[in-house]
Length: 129
View 1 (cartoon, one colour):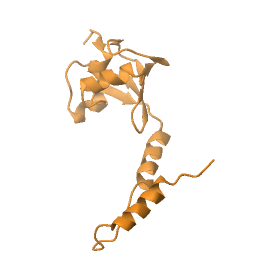
View 2 (cartoon, rainbow, N blue to C red; view 1 turned 90 degrees about the vertical axis):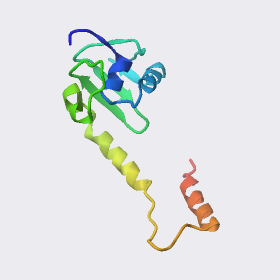
View 3 (cartoon, rainbow, N blue to C red; view 1 turned 90 degrees about the horizontal axis):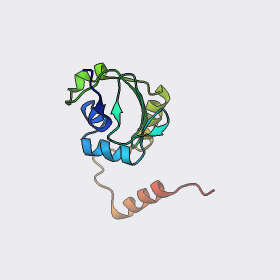
View 4 (tube, rainbow, N blue to C red; view 1 turned 180 degrees about the vertical axis):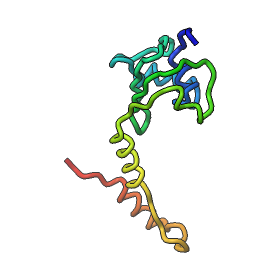
């Protein structure tokens, strides 16, 4: 496909965002950058462009390999873009998941109100500067 494609439509088609609306909102919020500059949703995308995408828990960097107009299946995603995100970002996300994980022994049941308050207090406590 030789035609240019809007960046919001491409990000939706490449499965970087669940909806095109979310992709457009991310552009308007300045979370999508090309060459260090925030882009508008109507920005025309070209093959070879490198996008910096700030998602809720990770900062992704992708290189456009193929322009799309229609959403592709998850199996086809590697053909659409190259993920240039450093491995450290994925390790940081994994570490965050491990620290947010709560474990309760089987058969103990749900926490009581008093236990829930203690859990919430432990989670909310942050070191004072």
